[in-house]
Image (tube, one colour):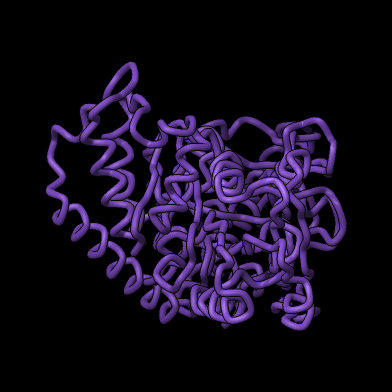
Length: 436
């Protein structure tokens, strides 16, 4: 009896898989024009990175690294110069000493702001892990507000655009830094394009020219041909275990922008008067250089995977954001489910497709820095590396999962099919034979 039931389940799984492959073939035909557009962006960004390497004469000895204080680490210095050129900025600071994207952003904000200043986010409430960085007045944690730095935010309008009437009214004599989150975070909205960010810079500086504009650039690098620092942003920050690390950087973060803004961030990372002049790179430089070289291509692979996922889930009947043919400005693909069971099954299905820890079954848990239980699929070579295929979701309504990354398109495709198969096995969806 048990053997018969097992055989029947295997036969059904194989049948569903064959059907999904037929759906996938049709989805790829549908997405072909979008794939070509993404390939062109990846190509242009690849050329931009190579030219920066050539300009600064990157050589093997730049990969050696340093120990101790890290004085005169030429590889570290050249990596900063290469990043500055790639991002069209005056300066950059690229370090393994940034422990995460949140830490990098925190250093940037503490570097730019002083007691009595105000930080105004005009893209609504920022990503969950920044809430504790912002903090509350007198909370004793060393947050921005604990240091007397005021915080305000302006919610987006119902259609996900900037509420310019409220932004204009909110900018005061105390406002010093305008915060912009490029990606959607855990919100059902479109991410902001570089062109939209350029318009934000223009409008806020028309109101108050001395304002500094800061952008959380996480997930956005190399998804377009321009970066925010090329359209007037004073400082941006990101993580090396996301896009620019190319799946090879083992840790770290970067900031790029004006020389003054980068220097102030460096003082916060190390100490005033020391800044970016020290900091042993140990054995990390080769991976950071090579990861940056690979990043445009790998981001292009991940974008292809996101578009494929959107086609597949839309064909099955789910709502996605962005839609399959939308122009993308970050890696994140959101899918809206109808209940908790579907949400969990999707994330667990992505984990089943991993090369690392595919046998692990993720469950929702109270993750530090998040306000709700979160479930995460993270079968990655670099812990938390979200340029690698991963997915996560807060366990709350609306039931939205966020998928990102994929070092190869083939892996993302496999992950999407595994996720759909997991939903079908649990009778949460029905996989019907494909029809043209």
